[in-house]
Every structure is written in C-alpha cells, then in structure tokens.
Amino acid sequence: MKSLTEVCLFGSLRKILGDLDDLPLQMDLNAPTALPRLLKNLKIPLNRVQVAMVNYRAVSKDTTIHPGDRISLFPKEYPVFADWKDFR
Image (cartoon, rainbow, N blue to C red; front, side):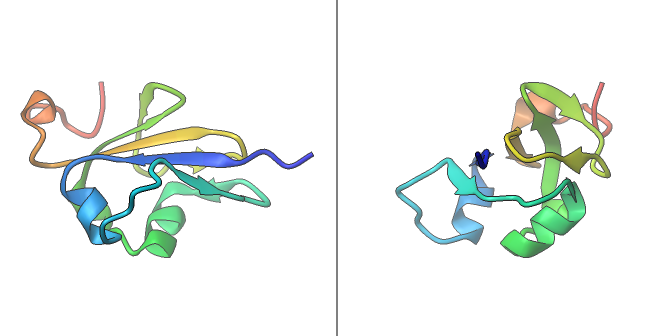
C-alpha cells in the first residue's frame, strides 16, 4: 500500500506553482527524499522558505521527508516566523 505525502504551501509559495485549487498537494514519494530535492522538484527555491514543518513539527531545511509525511512550507513574509532562525 502506497502512502501519499501531503505538501501544504502558504502565502507566496502557493503562487510559485500557479493558482492551484487542490491544495494540499498529494505526492507519491517512492523513497525518503531530502527536503531540498523535494523543493527543487516543485520549483520552489530553498531561500524562499522561512519555516518547514514535517508532521506539525519545525525541522531544519536539510531534513529527510518520508512517504506519508505531511509537509507545511511557510514563506519569509509570514511575520509570526520573522524572528526564527530556521527553527526552534
């Protein structure tokens, strides 16, 4: 049984992929994937992401995403994260 990985994009990150009505994205990852590679596949520059969360927990930007994870990506313009240095 395959487990879909859910990717939630917020703010300006949604616009990078165009006007998608069916968010969160559902991705079929076949193997663990580094977050930078996942972002590259989505054409989202790593420097546009202020905070990445996996399964509701803040993670570093070099973390590995596993099939079935839930990823939330927040852009730099979100003021609640303005004072975060990657994650806390």
